[in-house]
Amino acid sequence: MAEIKLPENKLNQLKEVARSFNNEPGELINVLHKAQEIFGYLPAEVQEVVAKELNVSVAHVYGVVSFYSFFTMTPKGEHPISICLGTACYVRGAEKVLDEFRKLLNIQVGETTPDGKFSLACLRCVGACGLAPVVMVGDKVYGRLAPEGVKDILAEYKN
Image (cartoon, one colour):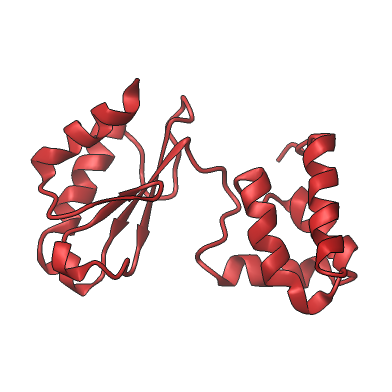
């Protein structure tokens, strides 16, 4: 895999974040959250900088990044789509909604469309079980979604 050249301004931002947490190894998760806000994801190059700034091993950083599902090592789309597959959503047809997103976007879970507009992910529960099945696009929640509604949601973000 080709190495990613990190933009200098974002690199400086990341180092500033580490300093704001006093470069404390115990603040790793907080620093990673901020790093993901800055870069959108946590490629190996970002993990290496975090490890160096907090004086922990890259293996330790990787272990944390790969353990917590919130962190991602692949870039998300401009409009990240998350389908809830928790029990309530699942029994109310979330899988059919997911299949419709896969079909219309022509990508699998964990992938991003070639134009970088959409990425597809599944999660376990968004805490909106009364609205099942639930889909999130970024921070916006869509509830009681049927497969037929997927094309309308995508149309909102295509422009």
